Length: 357
Image (cartoon, rainbow, N blue to C red; front, side):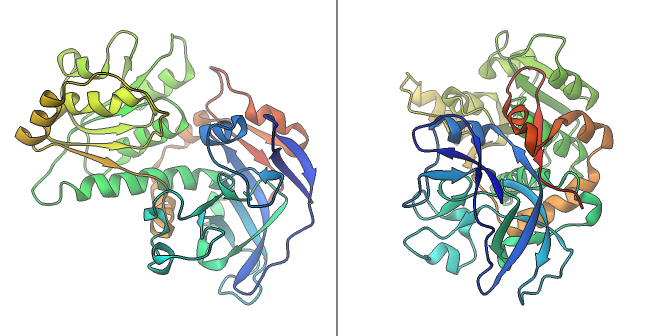
């Protein structure tokens, strides 16, 4: 079968041949339909994130997949089920307490493998196998864009943890700011727009000049575009308003600190970006004082698990069709896979199509 991988010492994805996998006991064989491409894939290809499976000279890419079960292999799945796989798996050293408690998304760095990212091959191949416990059924109507379920699940988890940090009192957020206008940021903005909590004011921060397709999407969702070159995060309260909820998806280290100043009293910021090391001066007193005197919170969130994927399938139905159409700027056949990895101002979200239902 054909697969898309990156080889050790190289920085471009290539098509390789691999044997079609055979499912072990408890695993199902899945025929891949589509696999999304995101910023993490670009980081893995560039060598700035992730790692190869032990003893392998290549890593099969892809962690945002949707496929169809072709061999249930005695599991509870059925042939023809449309499924999306979760990403985390036990590390090469074996299982641990986080997997035994069915909480792999809470495992610290080094205690897991992530398919297509670190320590385990991904889903950019014509077929893949997976334990059925890590395969989430989705409606057949979502098969075409099922690769979006994984990124939606990332925000489902982040929101769950952010809202849990405010669960000790009556928290009724009305303003929210998304930091980052990539595909995950835009998905989150659309999710907040559709949220039954009723956000009245939405903002999204980016670094784009008009005309720009991401700004068009923001404004069509009713959000205000904030150009970070003109208004920094800590200046947003003066330029607009303080925010009840901030969702950080940039990986820009200063945003974690600046978000505290931009939060409204009792507000919470969820941090999802993974920055490289960067030292800079911080007014620790002001930071500490804001956290304490105004009951603010910062939560970190990474990955997601089955319940978040299941929630994502429900959230998917609430997103406007025009939004999904505008968000996905390209679905490319395997023969033209390079186009899915192009990264310019006209590209928002792409996917590679291996097969159809």
